[in-house]
Image 1: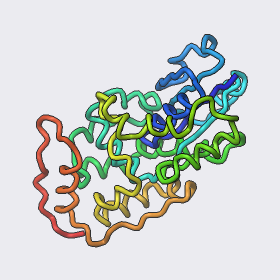
Image 2: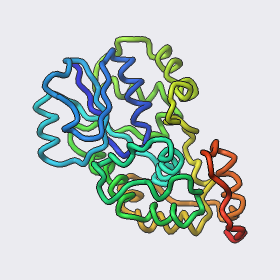
Image 3: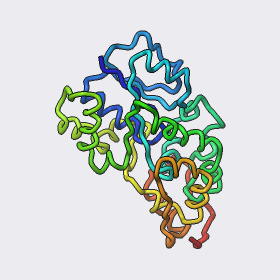
Image 4: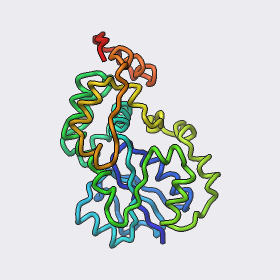
Length: 264
């Protein structure tokens, strides 16, 4: 029996890792928003479940009784928030993350990285709740921690480290990595789930004052997961917005904001 649960903050690379592990270990895949959305008792012995949920005693106890091993992903908080900004207009079910705890993502739909709406969201209790998921699981006993940046940089090395915890792979590591590249998965995702996949993209998109304000508001997620905020002090708001719209395919009705502030 090989049962895995990928539990972490949304947009941390959870889906990518789930797909890879499912292929490597020949596991049935399930992705849900809340624990009660799944009939756990009928799951096969070899499966992998993905969800975003707090580390609370009833849930942790239940996973243990069902013989699930937890894997959690960490990613730079600013890259996560930018990814949420890009993704949420195409996936209305983000409102189901954490069962709607502290709000949803409606206010940032089709907004830019320098918009007041994005900054308000990024420092909000909603964003804090989502960012807290991975840090709650990160150092918990028995949990396998995986850093997104390391998975991108050394995919095979990170997966081999995971295999020392979970056992030998069923299928070829090199073939699975090739088949599950972000470029290939991107074409299979109608809701634009797979975007750039580039660690540190936030430094090209967030002016210094915005990045620092978010980092201050979300200090726990930075410090507890070992991330720092060193923005590009030369990046202007005008350039940040230009880059943002060059990186995305705008949904209908998106236009550049009226802001022409060139200050960093």
